[in-house]
Image (cartoon, rainbow, N blue to C red; front, side):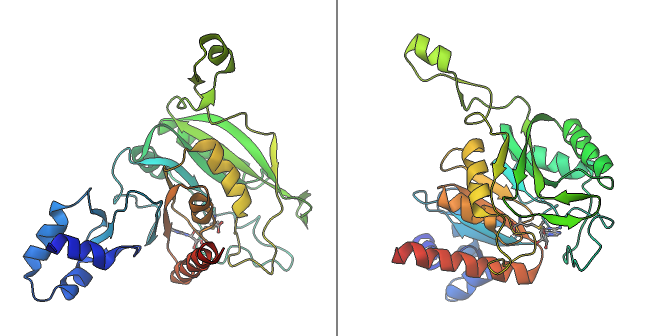
Length: 305
Ligand SMILES: C[S@@+](CC[C@H](N)C(=O)[O-])C[C@H]1O[C@@H](n2cnc3c(N)ncnc32)[C@H](O)[C@@H]1O
């Protein structure tokens, strides 16, 4: 067995491994040799995640890569390498997030800048979709919501559509208006790619023809109950069912979805359930641990089922 094969077998199935681990596993070999075998096999056996961190590539299965770090720093990702960005950033809105007995947004919050959108545009493939989960518009956030659209446009995104997420029977009676929805804002990088079936042309030509747009006509709203308080592992956890529905409209099987503010990892679970790969970035250690547990549990369920 070659050293490259030995390294591959050793780290196969692991989310990622560091150069240090590779050296430790092969302490009888000079570090330069171990490093050289990894470098030689980049793109075939190994993929570089970030400085000194790699993962093994198995082409026949979808993968989830979990990165503990700053999701606003995408420098480890190559230009035009991601098929969909699907994210729910921790928007800063102190006025809307306080009041009553609510303890909202325990994590660090921020407002996007144009640099965030330039980086999203850099890593996303041409024609692919950027999905931003946003709060319903109110008197505190309407300007910011408008700025998001402006920044996206300036970075090269086109407004594709906005779909409401109606939270089933859940209603939060706070502020001026009962709240039971959020917005799913969809942009494309340049003109949207051709995922939408062109029925007329298909009928005329007898072949499957597609036109610009996502995979099907989006609904007026997704009516899906939020995760119940007792089942939640994260304050702002999205229902996997909602993520799955969005993913099916925006991507094909085998594609790579990036969620740079992963929280509970719901987008990752949905991606794997729908045979897509995902890269999850989360800054808080405690959330990383929760995501790891969640993924192990899912694998157990799949194996047992
Ligand atoms: C709104 S929540 C995401 C919820 C997620 N969509 C889910 O379904 O569970 C935002 C998450 O972003 C994380 N976060 C905050 N700043 C971050 C940063 N700079 N990089 C990565 N994650 C960050 C927070 O810890 C929080 O878990």
